[in-house]
Image 1 (cartoon, rainbow, N blue to C red):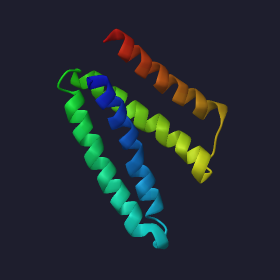
Image 2 (image 1 turned 90 degrees about the vertical axis):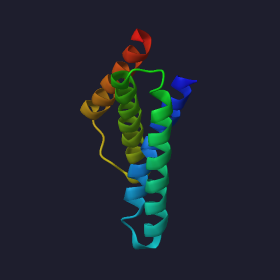
Image 3 (image 1 turned 135 degrees about the horizontal axis):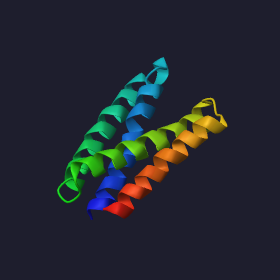
Length: 105
């Protein structure tokens, strides 16, 4: 279950930067801030649950990796963030590192 908690924590880690981005627009400010706060809380709680069985270094690296890669993809797909082969390579390296950490655990 610890890895399920960790993956879910990483998914909620994607929610708070999205909330902050949405909060930049005046019509969605409250909703964006609420999304960011709820996502932070759930992400932290699920990370705490995962760390009961997964070492802190592994869990933190996987958590931030999922958050970084997911936020990058959401930015590209929904907010028009710039893309390049170098940026995609960087994300691929992050994902590869997360996979290696999981396999080495």
